[in-house]
Image 1 (cartoon, helix red, strand yellow):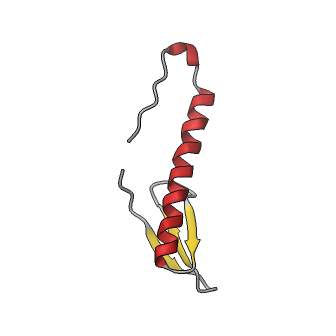
Image 2 (cartoon, one colour):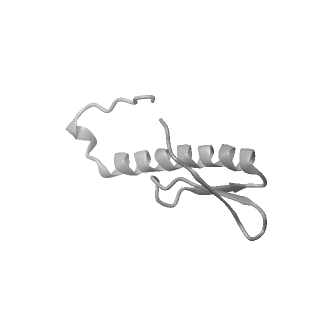
Length: 70
């Protein structure tokens, strides 16, 4: 999957990375490479949390659930 990420500089000098397609998905780093690595982890965590939320809200008896890797 591919996501657009915005980078900005915080007042304390840290680089803030945000993924606009995923509300609330924000991270930071001391420099650009660290911020990009951290936002990748944040995106993975965000997607995992949304998946878990949808599983807990769905009715498992509706059918077989299969895990798909992208």
